[in-house]
Image 1 (tube, one colour):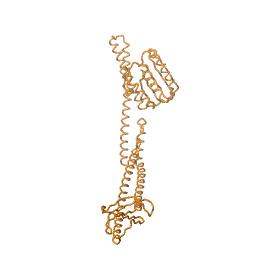
Image 2: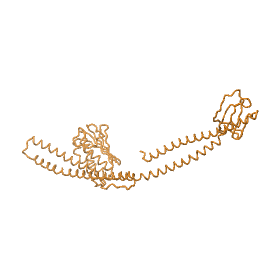
Image 3: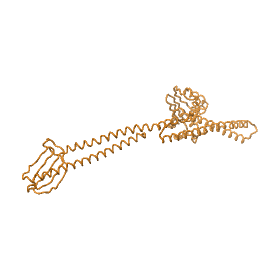
Image 4: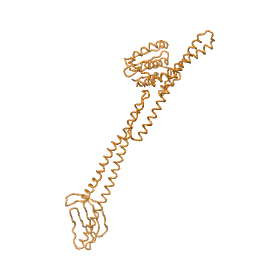
Amino acid sequence: MMRLFTTYNRVLLTTSIIGLLIIGYLFYNTLSQYLNKQIDNYLVEELLEVKDYASNKTNYPAHVVFEDLVIEYHKISKQHIKRHFGDTVFFNPKKGHKESGRFLEEDLALGGKDYNVKIIASKIAHADQAQSIFLVIILPVLGLLVVILLVNRYMTKNIWLPFRQILANLKSFNLNHGGNYQKVDTSIVEFKELNDAIVDISQRVKSDYKEIKLFTENASHEMMTPIAVINSKLDMMLQSNNLSEEESKNLIDLYSATSKLTKLNQSLLLLVKIDNNLLKDKEEVNLKKLIEEKLAYFQEFIQKKNIIIKLDSQDKELLMSRYLADILLDNLIGNAIRHNKIDGSINIELNAKKLAISNTSEADALDPSVAFERFYKSPSSEGMGLGLAIVKQTAELHQFKIVYSHEHNLHSFCLIF
């Protein structure tokens, strides 16, 4: 993208050059016409002298050559050319070379006979004069244009300096860091109004952010207590021997629903913490070792589905929260097992650049554009649709990239470091 004042300077320079060329062209043509007019007047005077000379002579030389003037006489049978001016190129015998000139041609009756008289005047001196006048006027104008462009560039750069500072402060402003937006002092009214508006907006955003953050944290924590009480009461009721089969079934459904609500609440609380960067207990995590621990943890589920694990891993240290690394692998490996098929397979590849996990499945491919959105899940999934959202938020927090693809009946998730 082109910068604003670079675009402005480019347009100004282009317009100025085109304008200067047009003005120079018009000025040079006007000056040339003016000088041609002077030469024409000079030729008319020379023609009058020829007429005066002819009134006292009966003989006319074939050609008369002066320094910058040539007069030619040609006998004709009848007059047919009236006074005519034009440009020409002629050979100047005095100088011994061709040069541009201006001529006046007219048929005259001299001594009772008809002659075609052609007077040619050199334009060299006038052309040099026109070029000198042109350069004397155009060169200072060109120099002035260059000076104006340089001054404009310098002024534009300094005038826009407060805007650059405002933009830099706006980019560095972060709600999670708790700092205030740094106000920029400027004497330019427009930038001052922009700066004041940004300060006002940043204060309101910060206030709203604190309220939403506090409400979310409090609501999540407050929900944990009644959910825990419900689970406890359901446990006690399920242990009772006085329940009918239908009542037991209803209690089991309630217990399952509250368990899902507990997981949902924990997942939403975790997303809030990730979004607000509240989990700052970073340490060097050995991802290879953690993957091996996770596979051992899920061993029972792997054996239950008779899944073949293909592990190709190298040592990889990551600076991140161990808790988030654990959650990340829980979701990626857990999903690969949960959505796998009987006698399926899981391929895990870990190297210095990426972690790739692919699994077989009978489910259709996910939509890559919304696969990581909150509450998105495939029709065959029984989850809450927050697992991949947590994976994405965790990846973005640590500046990783997560990519989903589906090829050769394999669902693949690639975490690029």
